[in-house]
Image (cartoon, rainbow, N blue to C red; front, side, top):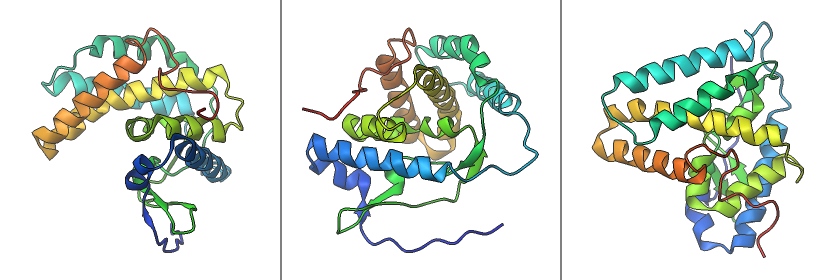
Length: 220
């Protein structure tokens, strides 16, 4: 397999966004969502296992690895509870090409104000909505950008099912991030624990499935 990319001149979006107005952050988020939707028009390879089978295996692995890693996250039982209660949502989900690590840290803002996407080295295939599992990094930089990314993807008509699945994918990803961070040292572990605590706050301990930071339209 091979792919062809082009050089993008500019500055990292995670550096640029905090210096912009909330309206500009939102505008870039909308563009990020529109680009992601275009990426997802590329079909997945044929003969894939069903998405429910693939992702349920991943969930099982994430839960097992978290429980074995020796680091306790306050509220982990709430995360696991939401996952277990919502596994059924994985049934009959479509699959497509995925960027694999889609967040502001892998985006470039050019001098002309365009948004470019970089770092396709984790490309994969799967449920297109799984690509929102790392929107936590976007929300940590700019909630307006994160909201715009969702709204742009759905042309400002976001289905309720999306939020329920995004919460499931974020929950699974937060569990996996704890054991993943251990080889990178204590500072990385602390970063992942802080992010998981933020996620628990956004979702009221997963009593709800729409994050507190989400806004349905441009900031006023």
